[in-house]
Every structure is written in structure tokens, then in C-alpha cells.
Image (cartoon, rainbow, N blue to C red; front, side):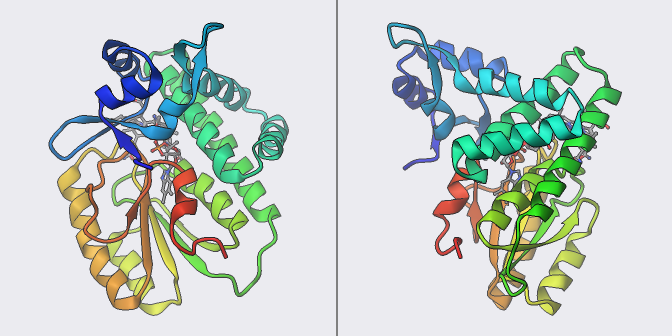
Length: 267
Ligand code: B12
């Protein structure tokens, strides 16, 4: 299954006109990814889930509805309410990867509400902190074998956003992995040093929408790829940042669902 679609293929798949797809992308209702040549691509799994009218025509991306509901939950800033909504969603979806793909839409919608000034920067900060604590509590509550394989989690250099990693560690824990959290602000040279000196099985890097420098992200990949090949460590990158595509080495994901397609990830 192809992960990324042109606007024309996305329109065909959704059964709507190209102009609707472009409008929803411009309004931020559909996620877009830029190719190195600057062309817009859409995420296949987003296009599959549309809200339909009674005649079966697509009227709005499902992402819009789901993202709105999750953003409302995040912005209650209430630890136990948010925790129980997440646990309920995990029960309904049957996996954390599906649940985190839903939640990510809510995090992105929270960012849109800040950008269009319907919430203040302070509300956004309190809500993100509450969400990262809830995610950490869920991660810690999932038992894991002390000898399970180890994944190192780091933000791309210069990117302060860590919620993608907080979601990722819950997904990995359910798949039987332990995680070593480096988060943001760790220089890439230190990530490389850890890979060379500790028994790490995989390294996961996250770059958010704020990582817009494709040349710098390509430099980071080139640097870390050499060490990963030397130490036989798997490399996976994700988030809306402009990672090189195709990657010279390693695996580029656009959602948590596709993580499970990585060979032998499930232990
Ligand atoms: C929360 C938040 C913050 C918090 C971060 C707190 C924290 N602990 O992370 C704080 C307050 C620190 C912050 C700071 C800033 N932020 Co901010 N922030 C956000 C917000 C709301 C969410 C970011 C996030 O977590 N995204 C991560 C996930 C949810 O999204 P994703 O990248 O698409 O990733 C998806 C997947 O790919 C997966 N994933 C992510 N990583 C990985 C890795 C692997 C391996 C895998 C498998 C999957 C995976 O998770 C998601 C699932 O679909 C966004 C809104 C948005 N649209 O993202 C703005 C946003 C990213 N921020 C923005 C900005 C501008 C900033 C600041 C520059 C603001 C400022 N002037 O100070 C700073 C500093 C940025 C820096 N140097 O990094 C802009 C960026 C715009 C741009 N193109 O530049 C955004 C888009 C807000 C907006 N609408 O304008 N921010």
C-alpha cells in the first residue's frame, strides 16, 4: 500500500474533486507532506477515513472531526479525564498505534487553535504538559520484559517538540520494546556516542512541523546512518518535518500504524 498520494490520486480515492482536497489541505484539515521538489503529497490513511453524507459522498475529512474531539479533550487540561478517554479509545481501537494516530490529529488541531488565536499560548503550554504526563503514566503502566529490545528516542537537533516521542514510546511499549528517552536538546553527536557505546537495537528520531530545514535534516540522517550501519542498529524517523524522502538508510513513517509494517518490529 502506497503511503503518500498526489492531490489527484487523493481526490480519486476520496471520490471528491481535486479542488476540495486542495482546500482541505490549505485549511489544515488534511495533513500534507512536501517532496524535496516542493510538491504536496497526502497521507493515504487520512484519505481512507472521511465523514460521508447519507448518500455516501465525502463531506469532510474524518480527521477534522476526530481531531476536534481530541483537541477538546486535551484542552480540558484534566489529567484523569484525559487518561480515561485515552484508555477507553485504546479499548475501542484494539491497539495503541491506532489510538495515537487519532490523538495526533488532536495535538495538531490544538496547534491550529493556538495559531488562529482561539486559545492562548499559556493554555497550549499547560495542555501539552498535561498530555505528556498522561502519556508517560500510560507508558510506565505497561509491563515489559527487562531484557526486551531497546529503542533510543530523540528529537531532531533543534526541534523542541517531544509529544510525537511521548506517543511513540507508548506504541513501542505495547509492541514489547523498552525505551531510552533522550527527548529534545540532546546533540546528535551524543546520540551517535550512545549508539556506539550502549546495546541499542533501534533509534527513533522525531521532527515536527517546526523542522523545515530539509538540508539540515538530511545532514542529520547522513551522520546517524553511518553509525547505525556500523553498529547494526535500526533507524526510524517520523513526524511532519521534512526528512529526506526516500531515505538513504532506515525507515520514514508518516503515522504510527505504518510502524507495525516494519519487519520484525513486533517481538
Ligand atoms: C505542543 C507544541 C509546542 C510545545 C512542545 C511541548 C512538547 N513537550 O513537545 C512548545 C510550547 C514547547 C512549542 C514550542 C514551539 N513551537 Co510548537 N507546537 C506544538 C504543537 C501544538 C504540537 C507539536 C507536536 O507535538 N507535534 C508532534 C505530532 C503530534 O505531530 P507530527 O509532527 O505530525 O507527528 C505525527 C507522526 O508523524 C508521529 N510521530 C512524530 N514523531 C515520530 C517519530 C517516529 C519514529 C514515529 C514512528 C512517529 C512519529 O506522531 C504524529 C502521529 O501522526 C504544534 C502543532 C502541530 N501541528 O504539530 C506546534 C507547532 C509545531 N509549533 C510551532 C512553533 C512555531 C513553535 C515555536 C517556534 C514557537 C515559538 N515562537 O517559540 C517553539 C519552538 C520550536 C522549536 N525550536 O522546536 C509551529 C511550527 C510552524 C512552522 N512550520 O514552523 C506549530 C505547527 C504551531 C502552529 N500551528 O503554528 N510547541
